[in-house]
Image (cartoon, rainbow, N blue to C red):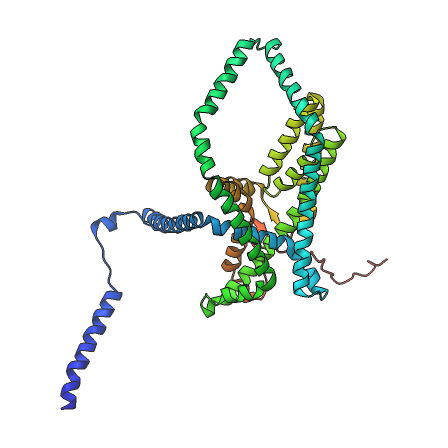
Length: 413
């Protein structure tokens, strides 16, 4: 009886096996598929995969924009952590307690920022009256130039243009007032973001390693070595970027500030502070702040001083591009200028000022992580391969060693 019961069950299993084999080995051919060229089939295969990747990236960007009040403080805290990391780890290596190292790092940062703000306020208060008088005089000189210059405008035409400009401002009054209604929420968002960034900064300095270990547990066990190595390689990139940009920004600010002071350009300290802040947005920040310094020199000191101010700005930027960046960055951090321009422009188009500020370090991080994962560097027990084709490289190149061959007779002579 048992054999009779087993036979139907075995037959059903054999039937299912044959059906599964037929499905696995099926080939569907139609006249249309046979007539499509192979190149077109390959192109469509790449196209739909590209569309899926683009859709995923678009959804990710949309989520980030919706959570910008959380993402921006997080990125600011990470960037500040990268700025403080070299000094903070130096204190830890010299056996300073972690809590004391955190206090010293934060107090020194607040002291530097407070000192810069005090210098800006001091010079603005000191030169405000003379700057105001010189502004009025410069406006009158420009008005007289429009009348006596090659344009030969009349006072009535100038006054008419001024009235049209004022009318345009009045027409936009509703937008200004509606924006003012949102000012309270904007100030509240800024304050909340500052508190959140400070809290994240304290957490990363106090227990960054624990946070990273917890993050690794979100990935499958087999993927953790790859994620851990890629994250650490990306973090080295961000730290190198922040450290070098800080030093380069300081040198740019000191150079342009001293040049403005020696040329007698007013508000030299505020200009230097703006140059320092603008240097963290590569290329774009340097151009904008340099143009502002030249404009101030033109308005308050005339065209010849503005020309010399332009020479100073161009000289400092050339020094940065051809001396400071190669020497300070070296082979630890390198970026192609084309990549910087495209990334900064794209970040500004997507997310405005925050996008321009975080575009380069994010692109550097993603690039290094992608190359690390693609080259399977965690299996080799090292970082990103020095021969990898990186837009941004974070691994110093190994010095070339000269092979010593057998010494020929008489070579030493």
